[in-house]
Image (cartoon, rainbow, N blue to C red; front, side, top):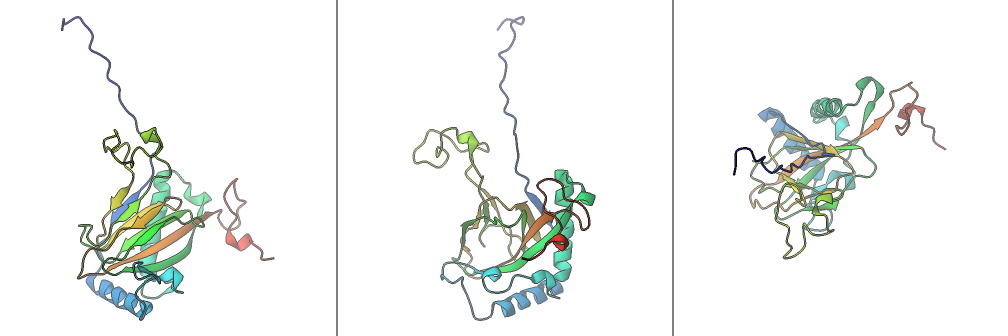
Length: 237
């Protein structure tokens, strides 16, 4: 090529509208962790599934959905809530104009080969998962997050269709997996579909805590458009 000939322009792809996935690795105290795991087993009792044998036991369907009020877990939930506030700060929310409410908080215990099916939390705004167990390998059952809509496949279904012409890439991936690791806390928008893959470790349970947050206006403040008033302003009828 002649030195005076300009090079062909290069097309660059820019990521737009990214989904915020928050992760922080905590360092649980071994004694606290032992007490928490013992308490989880006590709360589960004799049940082992939900109720299908292939589905993990989840506290929200078994009357155990307020761990934030349980003495064993309240300090941990308070720490997780601080990270949820940090998540909102980084998204650009003004802390003095938003109140963060814990809606429910429940344990999930997955036996070998058990899963949690694909779902989302329509009554919450921000969801989190904290892992009591896991070694980061993914064997204990990854948290799988799904995009609301896969725009970059261009042709609907192309990213997951059989024998299609679209190679796997970061631009068209059908899901994102997070491997359980003891002390890991993950935050994501509640509207995201997610699932828990099978626990492939025959010798270990996957124990986690799920938490749902709701955003409202602060107590005593008029709510801005689209933000619900503080629960203290609600009235049963």
